[in-house]
Image (cartoon, rainbow, N blue to C red; front, top):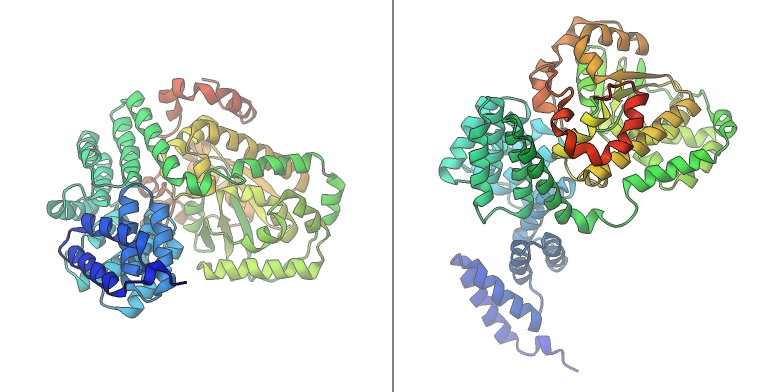
Length: 548
């Protein structure tokens, strides 16, 4: 039987030519409508799939658009238009590693295609490789002076480093050409807030939110920034409403990826149940003192719940000439896949032979080196807030490592998690509601305390408030704990922040140096935090924070 979809190739060619003509004339809407009709009755073609992907994305279904573009590339792997469009969508959906692969492929085919270099910069920026991102943005501008994505990207890099005057100049350059360009508005708003004129930021953000063109995700970022502008004006109820609306939008955008399957909270709760019924003797007997030769003088795991001060601690230590620090890289991923997909896998970890453990130690140090760590002769600080969930691996693989546990008033932690815009992962999806953030905090802290008592790793608690109140005293105490000699350079961490690649939302704040402005900020949102206080109060009491 003949496939009806291929009976009239001449008609198919005529339809394709009509669609191409519409697309070239700029009538993308009608081109996409005709492409959708053609796909329903004729053969698949990359151009048709690309146009329908645009339509699906505009309708608020980016995941469907991604699927259509993937199909187009199965048909024609070298279709530059589809590959570039897929990379753009993946960037917007905050999956930059895969997006980067597509932009690199486009550039291999067309090295002089400026938009691919600019988009490559955006992917690198999301991955935290900021120097390389800047190089990519500048390359795009060499090829195409005035490329708006590249200019807005450079503005964003300056904003991340707290260089608000430079960010403002570049953002305004973009906005003169394209009003309400989302990335430029966000950088300009950050600059206005940093300059102490949050009302100006509010006006710019409300203009962006009133524009029908930005995507739902872009508007969620704008609403979060609007919350910051309102917070800076002490309009706290309005600010909370903006944060909540922003997070609801982000939850809707990412629901298809993160709302199903085992959540980070469920994994932490399962870990707690496992250790409640596990023999402590089994774990104590399994601790090995074998040390894999890494060349490092010392090894520190810096853990703590997000927004507890881990980034500040890392930057302080990284300012020391004898320290090399790594920020939030999955150095333990190989051991996690082997022993921590499910808590029951840990039974095998207690019985693992020395040769197998050595293999995972080698993989750990290999991943650290690939991420840029240069540990020979230095103290290596591996900072990842939720490596606390991986303490069993750390204890088994690196029993001589020191652990720094960052603490902060739980109310400020949860509020800050709710307010900040993180790159989206299963973990950060959990933080988009106060209830989710508080429940995860409770589970993670239970596990961290339980494991600290069970595994007896050398551990020191460091309170953010204490570091702010007595920087030299706390920094010296940390140095003594890990065996590092004191250096005055530790006080100069803010200058180093502006030079280093920092992924987390703390970067711009840290570039300004120590400040107590965030200490006790939760009091402005006391009524909004009331629903989660029953979960947080035991930890407030345990860590000795004042009740009011």
